[in-house]
Amino acid sequence: MSTLMRPNAALTAPSPQCQTCVYLMPSESSRTGLRCGHQYFNSPVLMRKFLQMKHFPEVKPMNACESWQASDQSSANDPS
Image (cartoon, rainbow, N blue to C red; front, side, top):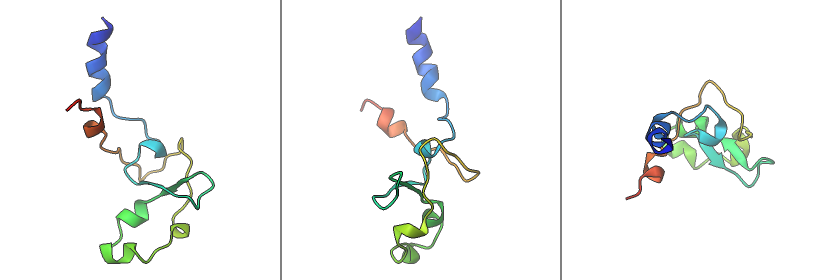
């Protein structure tokens, strides 16, 4: 019966937390090791390389904000 439950579990969306957000960026300069990349990914491509990581807010893995979007983890879950 547990095998019937697993396919349904894959269809559920991840919980709204920074660790599952598409905007999450790893950062060695952050105390938590993470920064929010919402501003980065929504800025023009030419401007991205001029901004230092200190311009992006530090986040904790379990936090979430109104800009949260689920990261596409379907390719990581596919066996192929």
